[in-house]
Image: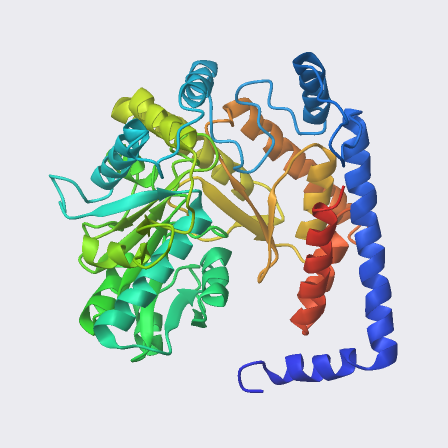
Length: 499
């Protein structure tokens, strides 16, 4: 009960009553039925027939392309450069850049770094992407030359890799058999996934009023079983950087690895600092930082499916490897979870970094930061809303400052206008991650739509948007038994994986 809380235990006992369980199931089925109707409507908009079995005979390329074009009609369109209405998601900008990446993918489409003797080019490009990324973040010849790493399929895999490597490193060097992972409540969900996958006890700490994890909170939480502490730069929910220097002083004193999650900030913060924006130290220049995660497929502006995990030196990285010496198939070594990997995606990441260069990243970052500051000022000027914390980059979170304003209903109204923002909880809020796909006109339009939506909610605080997510988030906020919410999420994922 101490770990769950009396409300959770009491609510769980009530939910387990047959009548209550039946009512909960009925409500869940109602919500899932709505989800399925919404998905069916979006699929129907494309007009493509469902294909659930292999055709008796293969289709001609022209017919396949026709079907693919119909499938594409189901998606949000990004035809006008700079006019994105989606938070994050699309980080590429510029037709020339996108065409270059597509050509790079075509050139290396059959490559696989698992066969380095056959495809040495992609092995070399992976090492160069890692080196370029490390050089931006306190590694390389002008920083800590021992910084090393590898490429992964995305931020989640980079995080899982760092956690697994750190756990095994601490088991080998400190004999820890009951590992603990210390994170702030704002740390990415992938760390919760890592703790679940790798049987690590998760210690989640509250953040301060500034929405940042502090060194003092970490100092109180570290135990003899701690194998890794996590700091976020920035945290996904609120877009603010944890107090890395203070946290690193604590972890270094206790001899505990410190991972800095820069999946969002890795290709923005270094250039924002060079442009004069206030960015505190957060990378390998800070003694005590032992690993980092950085997404090339976000602000590195590469195709989806690539990220970089970095380590201060090879002593930790080697624990991400799997070496098998007695397999009948021969000697086997793998750098991470995957065996085969797409060399084409590695090539697109390499092409993106080389094409943009320092000057290109500075230019893109300047545009993004200017748009973010414009949006932040615009939110502050809307009565009934307030920005959360003091974001260092371009992830801006905001919540209601007027009790009449249900921020989730505001989100539903914005969705009806074609916007796709991220809903947050604890507290109820929204955020947008501004990318190179958002221009000034898009930001101004969003602010206008937000202003109108807030005023509409004020006029009728109890109004709801048909088919909106506000009821779901409202339910999630008041139900102490998280099993109910979890059961809905599982049913929702089942629905997503259905035809």
